Length: 129
Image 1 (tube, rainbow, N blue to C red):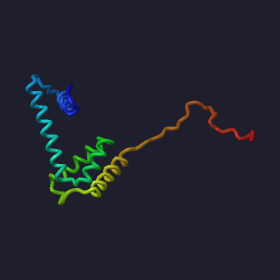
Image 2 (spheres, rainbow, N blue to C red):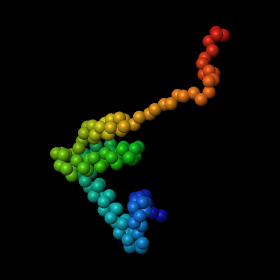
Image 3 (cartoon, rainbow, N blue to C red):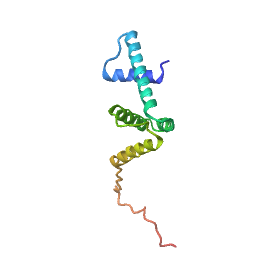
Image 4 (cartoon, helix red, strand yellow):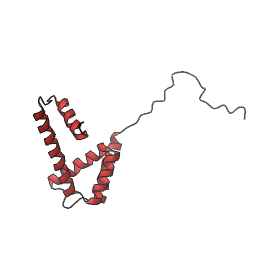
């Protein structure tokens, strides 16, 4: 049985239309995905302090999409040279707040309270009190 990262790699290949035609290509794709994952882990280990890394792991368990977004931000900042030292827990919290504010600003909930019938049964009858 294939592990979860293997399945994700195969699903990504299926989505792009480049399904491997033989087992050798599948093994190469799997190896490439494993190398990319290891490279991400190495970068995050260098860029993030242990306490912030623990918080990031907890976030990945609860909200994987938000955790992935945080990881991508950290890696991009590291590659651009915007991180002068390891990102600590306080800095990670600030980044998380920034993501939350951005997603809260873009999320809009509209409640439509139209009535389809002219029934006033929802009014409370206080006459008999």
